[in-house]
Amino acid sequence: MTDWPPHMTARSNPVADDPLGAILGMIRLSGAVFIDNHFTAPWSVLSSVTVQDCVPFHMNPRQLVAYHLVTEGRCFVSLPGHAPLIAEAGDAVILPRNDAHVMSSDLGLAPMPAEESVIPGEEGSVACCRLGGGGALTRIYCGFLATSEESNPVFEALPPLLKISINECESYDWIESSMRYAIQEIVQGRLASSTTMSRLAELLLVEALRKYMSSGEADYRWLAGFRDRQVGRALSRLHQDLAHDWTVDVLAREAGMSRTAFTNRFSELTGLSPMRYVADWRMRAAQTHLKDGGHTVAAVAAKVGYESEEAFSRAFKKNFGTAPATWRERERDCA
Figure 1 (cartoon, rainbow, N blue to C red):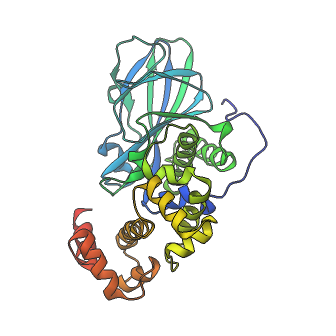
Figure 2 (tube, rainbow, N blue to C red):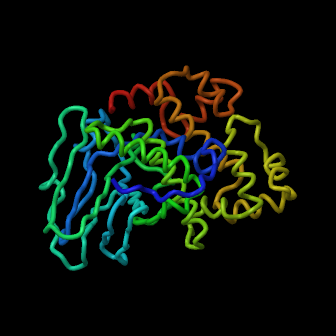
Figure 3 (cartoon, rainbow, N blue to C red):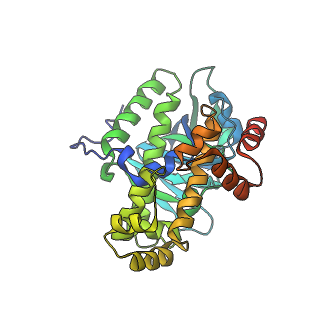
């Protein structure tokens, strides 16, 4: 097997201390690698993840992110309305909204539906795809990241097609070790660990967000806040501890700004007042904790910064039209 990614000095950047990782952690993500692809030129496939692909992993997602990890060779990835990308060994291609796309050895080839060439794996083993004309080999592992949320700002903030080079990622060491583990599992015919794959996919999304933010193209309001050095520092602290007793004064001190200057810049960048932003993300975190089912409503209230269950329940009902316990039961029925 190709030694992928090429050896380099590992770098450390714990996701637990990364505000983008903290945001992704609130979305309750699950992930898996589900197809081991061997393509030989010429080849072209039309691809997207389906709910059926999630069945072997006992998932019933409402939203999917597709990703492809190229470990050998190269390919084009095309999406209508966007310039094709060239992905080579060591690259990850991410489709935050799981748009249907074409992967091919050359542009202009007529694609065939990917599912027509997939050989389903036996229970507990990964599916395989063998396709092409016998030329140069491209090996791609296809995976997905799933969430039970109907929508979230992380996926909506990203463009529909992104490519990142694994060797350039700040979280290279975790991504490399997770991918090596997955490859070993797949080579032995086993499904890769869902927990490991969830972490891998989360790291890839964090890196995609980081790359997009640094590109200067990120015009989504909450991402713009993270790009600002001072406001981003306050946002980082906020997302690491939503239960803290945050006030505008406290957030302004974290940013190293006066209250007035901070409020004005925060509102300009995010489109929300500081405390409206805090309230919105506390409600989003509360949804995640309620879905987990391991906490009482009172415990969830404390986790997201409310001093009483009554105050939390009023705020939750104002946002979602129903009491927290009723909302949780409804979500369980829909799962």
